Image (cartoon, rainbow over all chains, first blue to last red; front, side, top):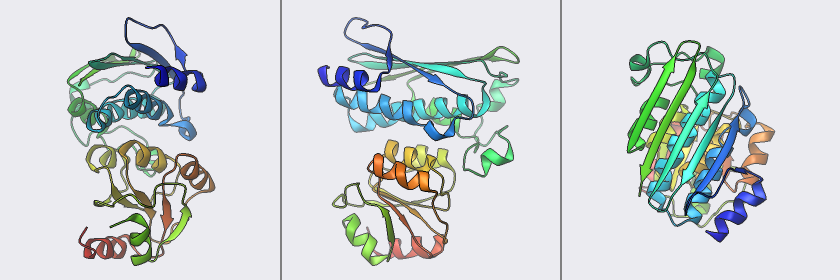
Length: 158
Length: 110
């Protein structure tokens, strides 16, 4: 736990509070900020690894964090990811102020994508983000409506 | 087989070598779609792609890949090389096509 604290202090990640034995981290996500895309996920992975989470589970947490992070960067006008790391589980909550998803059910299907061509050329927007999150998480919830942004909550147990 | 041996066998040009050259390579993965790599590639694999932008490094690091090989004569961007060094991901390039690079890697029977 001390090592994990040292990491988050060095990164100057916003630590909201120390909830019991868990850590609560917050990362801002900026629209089209591709140069730092994946950094929040990388930090989450390092923290959970430091706290003794096995590689396989850390990978699942990474997938959840990365896909949510990239979705917010590609589609939303900005947002934030809150990550709560507990001894037995990690919860990720991503909220954005994006355009919202008109048809969530369709968006959950593999291959469904609304990403523009310039984004697809970079290898994003394959329509795998939401399915990847759902598959990697033990619990997955999504709420979205046009004009109201998107809220996603994921839980990974270990 | 170690990454350093794979580099030799495939005649790869190393652009970033701060990663672990002694990591055992467990296989390969080929895709230009980042979410496929995130969802399906396995730790220790070599990823062959034609994407040369910096986001490939974040994916490689998160998945725990042994290296990224940018094939088809594509020149990875400078930021990609810088990020690879910083995140200790081995980054290579080759003028071989993706098909040829993957074929040679497969022939090594990893």
